Length: 388
Image (tube, rainbow, N blue to C red; front, side):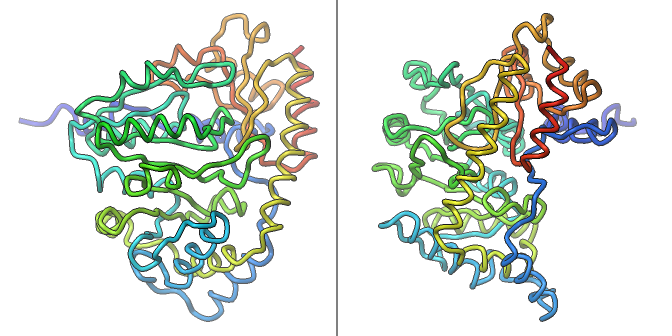
């Protein structure tokens, strides 16, 4: 008797990435891509020089599975310099991964058993739900409420139970630009302690902050030993295609992540880890300059979007603006609207439907990304002006 279905129920439970789909549509139409969050400007020269030197020196074979020592030492030193008092043991508390994407799924597979629940805030970065499903967990969604994307304490408390194994926190947040406050992190700490749950934090935008302070959850009392901090080179250093990330956690948790990581990907690219060591050695003024440059891009895009007729909350961090389409899309069908404007006037955005478990909740929203040259954002503005 032959099978009638060759795909798994897990794979059938979610769609392909809408973000990457919008990039493909943008390329086909010759539009300006403000959908996918990758820079259109160069990475620091120090990283390119280090990567080229590594290739010239034949750094072409496997690094240590959980990360080259120079890179791990560099990450630990940078953490200590950025957050005084936070000491990370590079030998037992770090695992280098193929980007933050692998770091998240490796962490979930290493810590969550099938049937346990993972709390996910929505709107969410679209990987989190599928990651929970792939790890066998049941996602429990908690809404961040517009206009300031606040947490309803009662709703968050109701999401936790004896089945809760973990909560995923993304701060600064994609797609809203929210930076979680110390009070919100204290609430999360209380709930994690009460229900003996882990906190998985995606902090890939840690240095792209404007009008708020980024507080690493691992530095919040009660979360120190129950947090898995996830980060990567992609956003801070403008190398999204390099796919080099890492996790920071206690030795026992790190040991489990390292085992899963080994069987998922074996290891991250060795020459790019050598470049990562150079990135970790950049001076503090690099991060200040990066934040200032992104603030200028943010302000320009916000002006562009405001003139075009969108409404939004100015983001406090990360590099996205989540907009309400309002009268620009009377049908309030952001999926169709995004697919229309990528052709005419030719600007790619991500429909809000991809950021919610129930797509209808994002029907009137679009996300625009601004890790772009100012002239790219200006060109997008000229096109978006034709919407009015």
